[in-house]
Length: 462
Image: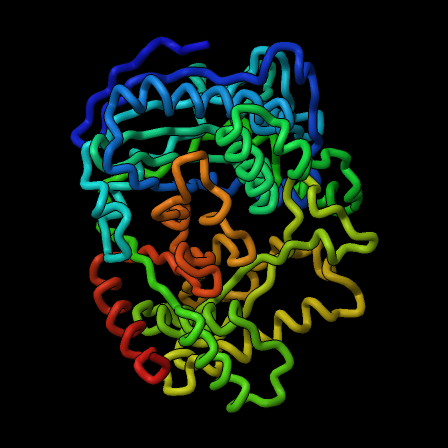
């Protein structure tokens, strides 16, 4: 099914087609997935934008349109029958509980486009204008966008854009509403889609892959009620505006690599200087190094660093790894800027993050301690100016090794949605999953200073 074709020409992008992709007929029917408090926490947050670049120097526009696009559409259709929430809509009403609902005729909006920017520039690690990436990720809009009727709101939760750069490669941009699921849920979907694209059927996926679990085995009704009330659904429906990234901005994005050798050096320093610290990991020292570096270029008085922990295996009873949706608990630390910018700033950051993570994971009251007040953080900041840095991504999930549609693994992977909030991305590297790849979005002036601070601080570990 196609929406009316819109030929949009921009200096950086030409839209060629806007097909609708649905599951095969009679494979899904009417199904719904209620939201839990784990999902409701994300209701008002911006969508998640992922962008995969594939280097294909021989790619032509005819081959792209006649071979690659049909393969992606067919494999996406087959995949959606196993992942019905991805093709559904988030349904909000003033009286009912929020849910993701699929009815026959629902579809994923796909954009097929031709890019005009320098592909080699886009896949680099050097600072690049953030504005260049925004046309490559799709908004969460169907041809009818969001629909409001009888006081209800319907929001698409997933969309795809495939862009060809003739003679260079292609990019695949994916956008999802965070209520749809966390990184584990997205990875499960990506694993299925790429497997089906490579083989042409879902036989291999059904034999070797992991089907998502939609049973709401996580039940905390008191938390559900609290976060549903806090969401103020009626006001949200009335005021809703689809969020999107757009320029012009003065921001640039760059990628920084911490090799296994450097990470081990950072860990050794922490373990030597802080022998009583019970939790020292590649993740905590990498975050500590970035946090202390960012503090040197951000002038706020108070600096907050936050990340999330997958709760599935840590709940009592544990939820299956294939549980579909969100299952994350927040963790992090905060301190004065002066504590992070002195010569012991990295160690201070590592100590705070390591202690707080250890306490969170070992608390006798369980991983959900304090869940009633996860979102009640404003009172902590008082009148001070605050810099908040979050982490998107996780080195645990190896996207570079999985996101192969049949023409090799991605040359570059970007989490574009860090641009909404000034967060960082943290993932395993393409060439070695033991190396860490960190994405940072800053103003051009801040980035110049950050590059200097980041690189000079590593000289002792190279």
